[in-house]
Image (tube, rainbow, N blue to C red; front, side, top):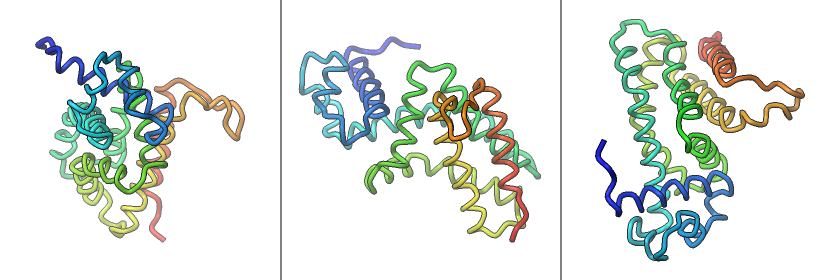
Length: 211
């Protein structure tokens, strides 16, 4: 892989600094000056030069981790899409597995998951629109696979179930370090075991009887 140019390296540092701060404090609480300082940027105009505005920076951050997700999922997508009768468990795993990989393998992974969770729960319409726009292609592929795997589930109900599934995985992965302090006491476990639990739970929910 080619080394990053000084300009590209500066841009990446700003993205990673923003990702960490957004994950920890939320978008509204983080100023551009804070991000510049955390990234070690000597020029306070570096962020404006690369991204134009705070919203431009949020878009760049989402594009950064969404590209990672697309690359991480593509092999699974292709394998499942080639099947006439894809299993629900495989479809859920194609969504879940990259989150586990991200948390285990990338230094910025936990910040990315926390940031996605914050965008879902705290972001206004403009912020959620950015997240949904970048995730739209993958969501359409998941929806098509689920309609093939679960043709008996009415489309609206299937959308609701998939939304619950996506939300439970994202919020659960974002909060996995706090499971020792849950409402049920200490329910913490390793990431792999946690992943299996979410896989079993959500696959069963998607396949629940239609009422």
